[in-house]
Image: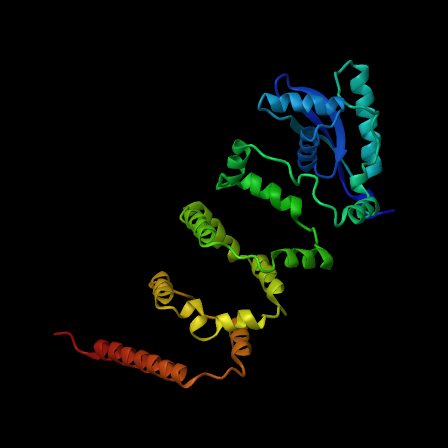
Length: 314
């Protein structure tokens, strides 16, 4: 028995937003993603009754609504329940667009079938290649998507992808696809402006600062970076004058952001980590001179404070 058979499945319904009537009953692990694929299939011109109904809604500028009817522990239970609900709805005279009695296993749920289809289509040109798009369609694609997702939407997206692991081959393919890809200055500027506008929102900033303090988040970040090797090219960018943090304007921004902030005492665990990270590191003569001057300045300031405290009040 494969893992998908033991994965919880949902029996869902597609609802006509005009009448709130149930027009389709199906099962899926992810009903939201399944609705997206229903719409994609209808837009490609599939000839079924369900696809004709969805195309009719799309022509009116609306989409079907999805509603989870039941969540079952296994695929077999979900298949049986789907068949039962379809039979009951048909007996009551509901105008369903289902073309079968339910209980079928979609080929998209079987990894072996998906692998065979992937191997057969590998190297073939995309079926969308050569299709001419209207200027209106192109403008919609170019339109920036700078909408800020709500907490519920962010949680739903996180729950959808949580626990999914990419195989080594998938990671390698993603890396090869992104290798050599350079963002234009215009794209960098847009990404920067979008990030600044989000960071200026006090709610988003507070959520980020709260999340980064959580032990589980810090542990995940540490585990993700543990053992990661830095390429010679990236290492060269971080050393010497190439390091962005050494630019005067960047140092000024960091100094202004940290000015006035107070930090508590460092724990023994943090001290041990800092000691391990700096162990064996050789400092340049210039860095040693700067550290010496900074230490002397701290001593003079502390001495002046003690002297001022000891002076009698006039």
